[in-house]
Length: 444
Image (cartoon, rainbow, N blue to C red; front, side, top):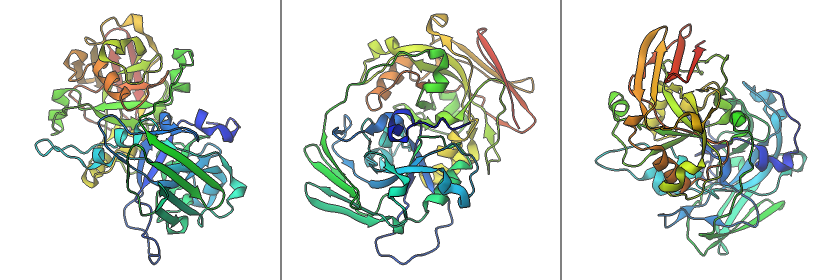
C-alpha cells in the first residue's frame, strides 16, 4: 500500500490504528539488562479514543477511577511491512505526547465462577482514553531514546521518567509489529509508560509534559464530546472505517467447543483495519502460527455515529452488513491467554479479516435469522444461524457504545457458530451468508 503523503500534523483525523506497548519500562535508575525472553506486549486502541488538547477525560460509566500512563507516541510517516530494525526510523514521521488512560479493573477483574481473560478492548478503548498533544516533527526530537516524561495530578508529581529506560526501543517495536500487521501512514505507536502510574478520579486534573517541548493539561470529568456523522458511501466502508470490533463466544456451542465459559456480558476485542482482505486476495498464515482457525461471521456496518445509544434505538445506527471471516491464530491466542495478554497478533495480522462487499440494510430484514456456512476444500465445517446469538445486535451496539463511540464505517463482528477448525496452506475456504452472498479465499 502506497503512502498518501498526507499532512502528519492531522494524524488523529486519518490514522486508523493506535498500537500500545505494555510493560516496556524498567524501574527508574535500574541497571541496563537484556530484554526479557518474551516478545513485546502489544495491544490495540480504537481511533475514537483520541482526545485533543482542550478536551476533558471521561471516566466510563460504572467506573470510579481510571489510571494515568504518560507516554511518548510515535507517528508513522509512511507505509511499511516486515521492516528491518536498521530501517525502522525511516518510517517515523514524528512524535506526540500522549496519555494511555486505563480502566485496570476491567483487566484484572475476574469472575471466580467463570474466569475470563479479557482482551483489554474496553479497558483501553473507552472514549477519551488517548489524550494526545500536537504533532512534533521528527527533527525536533533528534534522540527519542533520551526524552524526559513527567506527569502531575493536582500538582503532585506522579510520574517522572525517561525513555532511556525503555526495554524495547522504537526500532525494535516498529520492526516487531510490522512482521504481523502493515503499519500505515498516520498510525500511532504508544511506546510504554515509566513507573508511577496511578488512579485519578473525577474533579482532578492531569498536567503532563515531554521534556521542555510540550505540556498538556486535562481535567477529569463525566464530560462527553459530541461527534457528527460524515455521511460517506458505505459501500467503501473498508477504506474509511476506523474500527473493527469483534465479539467473542457469542454462540453457546462455539464457546463449549473451545472449552470456554459463556460470558455474562459481551466479550469484546479489536482488529485493525489493516487486517481487511478484499475478495480476490489470499489468506496468509502469520509468523509463528501453527494453528490457524476459520470463523465465519455476520458483520454489522455502522451507518451513523452512536454514543450511549439504547437497545431500542440501536438498529437506527446500522447502515448495512457484510459476510466476514475472523481468522484466528489459535496457538498465538492461547499463549496470550496464559499470560493474561490481549489477542493483538492472534486476531490482527494482515489478511486476518477476509470481507465481502457491502450488503444494504434493506436486503437483510431480519439479521437475527441468517444462515451462515463455511466449507474447506468442499467439506462443510460450519453451519449455523444468527438466531443462536447469545447477545443480539441491538444489545451489542448499545453495550459497546456505552464506552466506545461507534462511527460511520465501523464494523462489528457478531460472533461465529460452532465448527471452527484449522486450515493449512494450499486449502481453500468457501463461505456464505444464506443465498445472498458467497466468497472464496485460498490459504497460502
